[in-house]
Amino acid sequence: MRWDYASPAGKIFLLDGKFAWFYARGDAQVQRIPSRDLDDLRSPLRFLLGHTELEKELVNLRLAPASNGQFTLTGQPKGQEKRVARLALTVTADGTITGIEIEETDGAMTRFTFADELDNPAIPPAQFHFTPPAGIPVVDATAPV
Image (cartoon, rainbow, N blue to C red):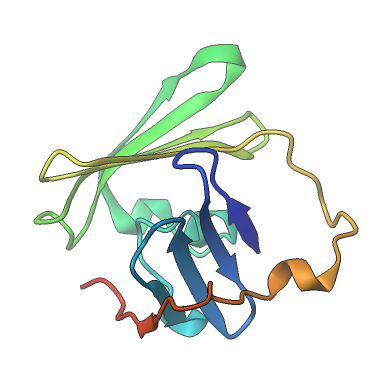
């Protein structure tokens, strides 16, 4: 999986099967984490791959209508009360996720918007290989607690 962010420009998330790589142009380092350790509720990958049971993982789960015939599921992640105040998923009637919003207890907000999804498009394998920029060190990150 590869995500090239529009904002901030130059930010990349790449999952190559062994590691998840995080880098934004101008950063002093590249972060990588073993893909098996990437199971944080703040990661959209967890939801997009269906690795959640919302009824078991969120308290105060609510469903509300959203724009364009979509729905918003909102809840507070169990066991993460000190870090995540609210999690919201915007989904279509057939369950396709079109947005994820995570509000952290310190006020930080992370939003992901998904559009124009393509199933299994032809992409050159080189697109899933990350080479750190020259002179930028790679730091092994740890999974969030």
